[in-house]
Length: 175
Image 1 (cartoon, helix red, strand yellow):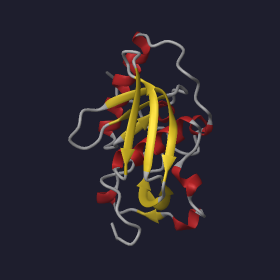
Image 2 (cartoon, rainbow, N blue to C red):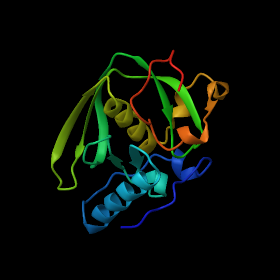
Image 3 (tube, rainbow, N blue to C red):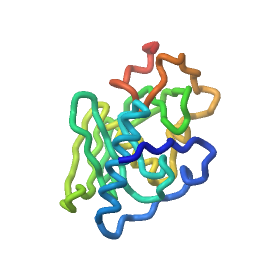
């Protein structure tokens, strides 16, 4: 497996809607392995294929203390509620912002084995990461959900390293 550099804004691949994966073959399995390695090397909890320059609808998620997993051609089929979360992105290192994400997220997609799955996440890091990574494959970044770029906060070096890093904190807390 290969660790790939994370693409940073303003790389145009981050703003493109990624293409559906027509067939899960050896190249997709290699891509998933590379993405997981790249995500961990960058200290993230999620990564979308466009973030390593591949415009395909593939995401990987690695929640703390859980096995990482991949979703191919994922989409959100249901979301409800609202909560304020603190979020960052590997493609925009050094900054975080508070934004609104859903309380409940239901996503569907294919496993690397080609099996259709549904994932239900409520009020946790997984719900936030599903929205964040699926946004990526649609060409949307978390900063697009902010009222203004003026609300971005510069992070201290020890805070850096990941997409929605750690459990989201209430908007009133300081990181």
